Length: 102
Image (tube, one colour):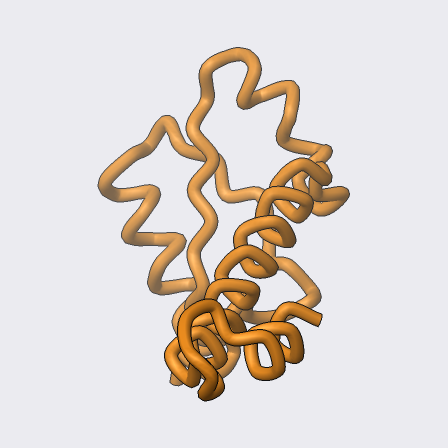
C-alpha cells in the first residue's frame, strides 16, 4: 500500500518519487526479516530439549556439522583433547547447512 501511495501521491512535486519507491520494499524486507527472526528465536527447539538439564548445570553444548565419513575422526580428536567431554550421538536429520559442507 505504501508503494502505491508513494507513486500516486508524491511527497514533493508532481512527479513520482522513485527514490521512495526503491527504498520502501527494502525497508519492509528488513523489517520482515527482523520480526520473523525475533519470532523464530523465541520458539524452543525440540531437538535440544534433552540437553537442557546439562546446560543448566553449566555444561557446554558443542554441535558440529561434519561429513559422516569424518565422525569417528572428530570424536577421537575431541576425546584426546577433552577427556571430560561426552559424545552424545549423531543427529539423524543430517547437516544444518547441507550446501555449506562438502
